[in-house]
Amino acid sequence: MLHGHCGQRVYLMSLTRLACICFLLATWAWLSGCSSIAEGVTTALIKSGGEDEKQEQCEVVGPAFQGMGAALHAQSEESPVSGKGQNASKTKVMVVHGIGPAIPDYSVRLQRNVTRELGLNVRNRRSKRIELRDPEFEGMDLGTLTVSRYLNNEGTQEILFYELVWAEITAREKRVLDYDTSERYRSRRASVNHIAKEFLNDRISDPLIYVGDSHLKILQSVDQAMCWTLYTDWNELPDGAAQACDRHKVASVDDLKGYQWVVITHSLGSRIVIDTMEFQARVVLKQFQSELDAEKRDKARELLQAWKDQTIQVYMLANQLPLLQLGRGEPEVVGQIDSYCRPEGGHYEERIVKKLQVVAFSDPNDLLSYAIPPAYADEHMDSRLCPMVVNVSVNVVPTIDLFRVGEIADPLEAHTEYDNNHRVLGFMTKGVGNEEGEQAAALGCEWLKTIED
Image (cartoon, rainbow, N blue to C red; front, side):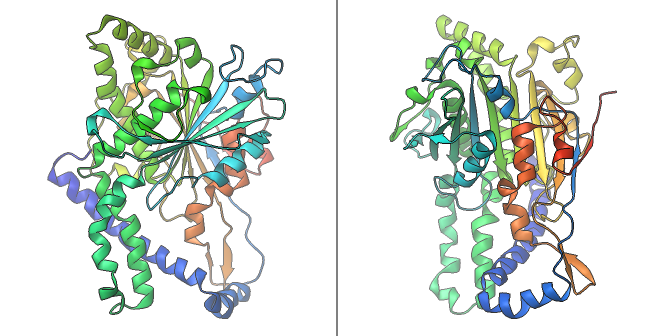
């Protein structure tokens, strides 16, 4: 959350620049969608520069990391997954969208691409859907969580996708902008400008709402989604219910150790997820530790201890952490990663998780994505989360010569095609520099391995 008027001014200045970029994206989207222009102008421009697409660029900078397929391959081939099998390790993937409108099942393409990479060809016929609630906001709709289940043919490997739609929170506040795009103004505004205005109103408003009074509502939405993801299994999930997740009625610690947890975010979603984790570190964990009920307090401490041995994988598509850091305050604990995350560190027992593995994907031609600077984790992330950062710079769409005087890449597709790119999918599922082999080389990428001092 922002601190002080100065921080808000800096943030609003960045959003002004963002508005200009979004206008360009909206105009490009309109041009790309107009068949007559595509045939009469765009095609001519592209072909006049030559039809050969430039080689896609790809570089990985960071330490080795395992993809989400590692745990699946480690599962016992002899013990089929059946609800909560003792020997069946599971993978749970929470998906969090970014700016703009979103409806349930928006991540179906991502889910299918990931499961195809992992060889999971069986799916439960129906997904389960939960309307999120929270006692802090009694009676308020905090979004929708859709859970889908995938398995391999033998039933020995399982992934549960928990897809969160938090856009319902911001949609209510955006209604104040409906007058601006009503027929009263449509008839007085140039057509391309009107399309761009609708595009801006749908998207530029989300970061503004997020830093406003709805900040905690969105954090609670993600917090509730995390609770359902972490502490329930497929057979325990309600379907069609509108209810809150109760952390005090969670699975056993042994169940918590039996799966890996993965988060996939897009654009603003990356900021929201990190904020939620830091929010939990600052508030939720303190509430657990101060719980008056002895039985609940003991269970909370047991779970907290189990979390200290967990590695959480976070894959950030079209990452925006540096942009959305502007004008913000810092977490409670920064610059002490070694002290909290190395066994010999003085605060090692106070860590929250063993490792927060952040893999940030950015296309240099995506106007709204950013690589994470080398010192970012030390200076701007809570040290108790033990963050480890890997940057993957990859062209998710090709660049094309334009009139032999320059190059161009579709900026809209450069922001939206990460979940459909074979390299991005390869790194998410297989990692780099591990037992899966030379994954970077296999994908035609250069890996610059980083080490600690």
